[in-house]
Length: 222
Image 1: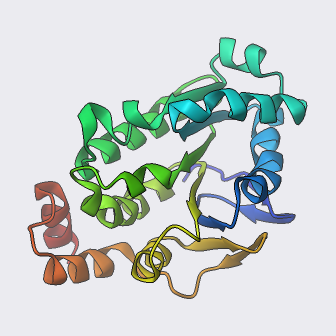
Image 2: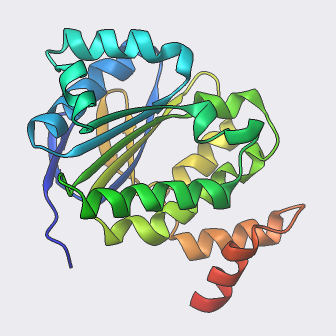
């Protein structure tokens, strides 16, 4: 097992791997909470990947710079990677859980084998509100992360605007994350459901089959 490094979130020191859902009331609250975590990753010589709407990249970089993160320098040496939601989550104009699982796991493998070895990933999940094809696979994707992320030295934060997601969506999101950030504090999530158990529930309630590899995974590990 790879030695896991400590991570500071909301003033709490935790040991990875971490998969965290972070609920915010505003973009200001989001940055107030996550900027120290991003900055810590840069300082600790970790690979940091940020995925958010391309239209927000300029503002994002300005906020990182205001937090004394040398954006141009760390981007140039590929320690910080800024990706657009349209090139990852919504590649080709739709979301596909299997495709995004492959993208994320390959990023974790590349980080593990690269010069930085430790991975910090932040995804702004606002893209899910566009209701593009495949968006209904979001919870399947979030659950699948928990089947492979623990193999890597990583911390992954999925940021959600609490005011824009429905109560049922928030309940599903909580079920897929071992940790949750609410009101600027991080907690061990009592609503978390182990991934295979949750995927079994999704299979039963889904109006469509889950992706083939997900169903094979559930069958194999059941």
